[in-house]
Image 1 (cartoon, rainbow, N blue to C red):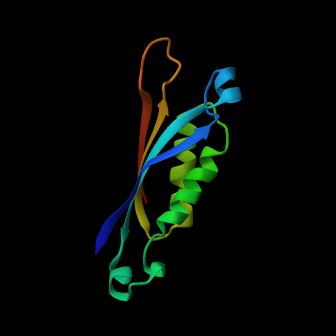
Image 2 (cartoon, rainbow, N blue to C red):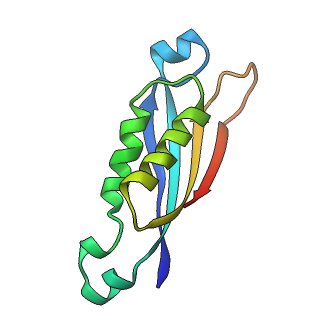
Length: 119
């Protein structure tokens, strides 16, 4: 049985951005991550070992958000690759990262990137 696990609306204050002031004062980011995996074993055994622990997924996202980068694409690639490396049950990852109130010289609620990768 295949299924999906999603963590939505994760919020982080982080120091990603091209401009020096973004790397110094930081900004707020919102992250959504979805993984596909086979949940057959977990459904039959009712054991965490048979599925993908979403608390562990959160830790991967947090670890990568804590590392300053110029580009969200770099942060996103690192998150996706680390999830696929650490969780062998995961067959695909979808990721959305939004920078809240990006400094674009005008009004914008968010600037968002979307990434997806299959094993």
